[in-house]
Image (cartoon, rainbow, N blue to C red; front, side, top):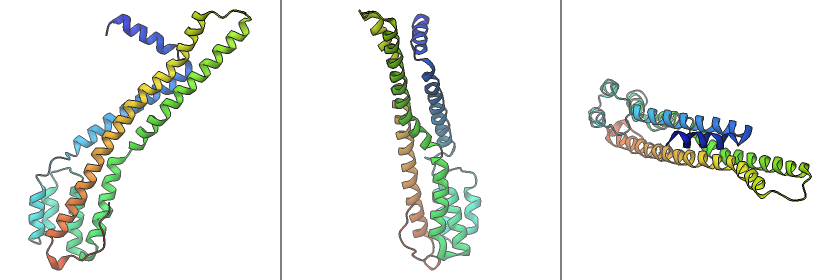
Length: 220
């Protein structure tokens, strides 16, 4: 992008007036949330299940106390769930499934944090842009009325219209990527939810028969 293009784009955005300020804020917040969630998802290594078979083997053997030590080098959100289940199998076998659901819900809440903010920005940005356009059109027609000219200069009219539409374009430009980012992160979260549900069922199946009791359906 050339310097002239950057300058022209800056001049166009400047025509949006004060309503561009909340739109700038929305764009910054949306980008910050998306990048932070990406880093969080990468930090927990959702695709790393190298610890999984070892934990299941310990549970099959009834060595529940060793599960936490075997998994403490990994950061997958299922690890606190498996460790909580192992502890429950050791102390309260009748509460294994409810404990698994409780810890899994807490882990999902951590991953879901701030996703609603992206959805909110995707909804509010077009409305802010529309508000800026309406205010710009009102201001333009007030100016035309106050000029007292019988004839309307089409160049001035078209200039006022495109200046007013700048905020709508900016709002949509922010909303579309924010909505796409929210959809992507939500799909990743749904994958984790299914993965947690599968791991819980596998741990329950692997646990010694005398240690488990059916407590109803497993919902996370």
